[in-house]
Image: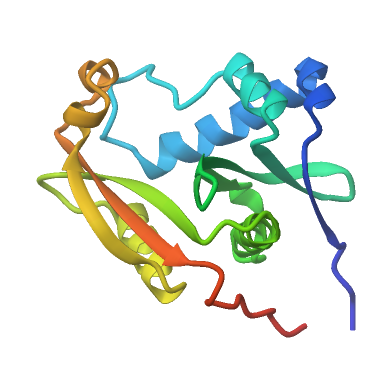
Length: 191
């Protein structure tokens, strides 16, 4: 039996924002994953984030990373909306390392961290095409629901983000999911 390398997860300290190579690696991973998962939703050349934006989120202690043997394999952004409500987004894992539970473990880490801070609910936004189905978005919707999240609101992207709407290639909506994280325990996977 062979053992797989361990997954190391941490919230980046603010001083990591000056590591321009790491900030670029995170932005590149987010942009590569979203380019594939949101194919057809955005105009050519539109990107999800920049290294400077990742640095800004890192300074605010909002970026959590996952590494295997020191190599970046995933990240998630977590922010406080209020003292009792958090939001996670930009959850990505390296496409070459899919089905290893990286996304699940990143989300678990984020929930545990928020719970320790007294946060009661976690919100997730999912951007979906309005007039057609996209397999990756269907997968995420099903994963959110299996994970105990409930749809609490739907809205038109252009109403919430009018400055980004011109970058869309197709009309899109946001689906807002939420879960009570104080009373909903995450399960550890076996093995």
